Image (tube, rainbow, N blue to C red; front, side):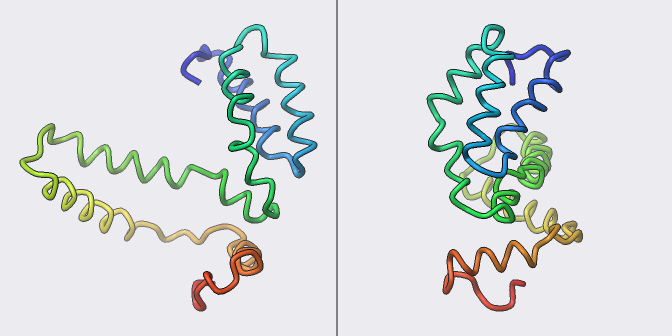
Length: 142
């Protein structure tokens, strides 16, 4: 998105959202074709990137909607990274790698204490994960 002007970012993201939030791979392909028609001439870099990485970007369509929704939701991860950057930016040099690891560990401990909101529709998601990954899903996480 760094090549998209601020004025266009919302519109471009809204159209891309139609691709990765599609219910089926076929719908995603159709939405991507519409995206290409609308934005292809103005933002060929985005089109090329999506075309070059199509298999990786659409691999999550192998899973049911409940799991896909968890996969493409990155707000939690972005928030976590933002909070880590706050902690690590205050000090520009660390004497050892272990010092940095300790700071990240302590920051993670502090950040995770603030995670009080439940994940939306977690029960549906965990049941789908149990179907796909069976014994890898530990009892008690639902």
